[in-house]
Length: 373
Ligand code: GMT
Image (cartoon, rainbow, N blue to C red; front, side, top):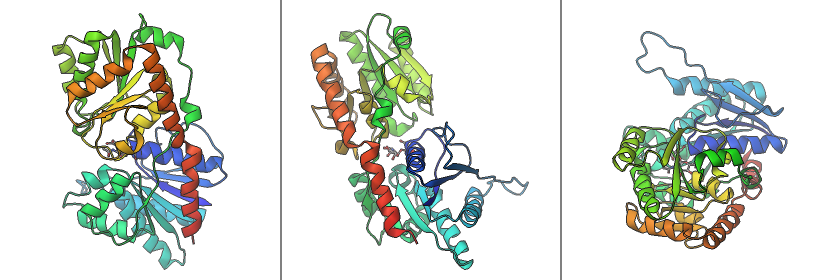
């Protein structure tokens, strides 16, 4: 099939998932056309079946706000017509679903039919999409999609609660390429991070308020009191300076490294012993799943879709949002001895396998086959 994928090209989970999906589909022989404003960060290799179409947004003195959505829809039209696309798969509703709707209408006038699939990822529904400045367009464009999917049962239910949705929403959970993430640690790297064989704790996010990154630092503070350990903070965003300030206040600067955005996540995850995710909400928590695929257990909140991927007491533990004391104790109980840690690592790996790329991507292919023109 000829498949167009519209997504954010950044480190956010929706862009990562969309890119990994496109790569997997290309591997299976489909032609995949990425349509976005920058080369997606995970699109870092050449593949004969992958094409990248950059959306150019011309500036003009009149434009205080250059109309990205118009440029995106026009690029979609061009790609559909010239590459005979069967599908446009919009990841993250705003603005991809409405641009896809517009493109579909335009090509229809030229006698071409294209199937629009919208995958809802999280904040497009639970945070930004709900805002009344966006909600009417989000509701309309979701309803106009030929197929709607959500990345968890929780997100599906939240969508029905927040918007007047007139059709079914299929749940297709996010996935991970277990083979790629199950990597041997690079010894030299591990020695630099944990020279005295300290436990290595990890967190990765976009450092937005919703992630409650201060809680990560506070939990690490408690762990570090009783277990020799180091914390690696991966990613970047508005809450990073505050979290760094907290590290200084707690005199933890020698134990915590803020390493910024990382493309080769598997190399960092390979040296980890525990992953912390303290979010107020996660529709799914792809970062946690990638950690589990690297055999890293997770301590997280029990918010949103996280209970759909984390089995409490098996591949990690969950606690209530903001309950730092509880999550600290749970983390310590995993890290306290090698035997327990080994058991949780095995549990993490086993659970990640349920969400392996080979189990999930066929679900998307099945949808494409059912609904394509
Ligand atoms: O976590 C973010 O803020 C980024 C956001 C995105 O859309 O890029 O992530 C959302 O989509 C991911 C992929 O489906 C999910 O794993 C994340 O849980 C979800 N984030 C939230 O719901 C906050």
